[in-house]
View 1 (cartoon, rainbow, N blue to C red):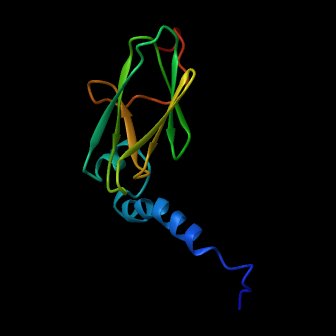
View 2: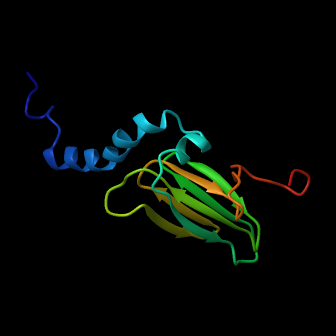
Length: 127
């Protein structure tokens, strides 16, 4: 039997379960984290992210830590799928970076035409 010190704090356990509940609910229907699999979850909620600055902007997508780079004037949609608690996104702005947390654990990044916007840095030679 676990000692009092080894038992997780009930409040902490509840907080962790609140964060992971959408993952538990969505994963069986998605099957994997691919672009098309995520879209099959349905219930899409898109959020436009646009770089109106003069420098390249890093879009950091959580909870999996994928980086996307937007050139000045470029825009993408971050779309949350499945179910979540309270709200589909949380955002944090830092100099040169916008972090978007998809609280459903399942989100895609696409261009304005709906095509997958690939993660990672792009340079002029690679589009």
